[in-house]
Image (cartoon, rainbow, N blue to C red; front, side, top):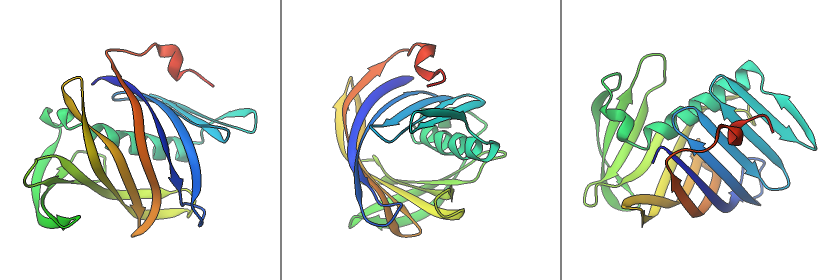
Length: 196
């Protein structure tokens, strides 16, 4: 899918205790993303521009914030897997491991000017079950090891789409989410990714 919209309900653990949240997101690969955490904030990434809105105020992202969002979105694009057909990506094996007590095989994705990303696939189903890379935590002000675990795939318009994920940072829970109301579209209007 080149573009999609979805909603999610989940729990955010980045500040300690788990805080429930509801999110509404739109994504258009590879450079556009909008996420609204209802009643809290909105983030918009549109290529080389980005904005954050909270408490009724909108501001441009700082250069550091923009880079973090671009890096996160780039990893999200890689997990769609179809970009890996491009020759800019170099693939190598990481080896086998156990994820949720099931055998998985790892593939390292390397590309110029980006950090390596390890993708793990269930040996039996072939589905992506984990993504791992070095991410920058704005909450902690440092680089962390980020792992995203994917489960509960559902078929939508002929593609298997993940509907549940768990993100860990340095082994600690960061976000748990259930994704629903997924709509695949050919193209979203550019206004979706305008300044909020």
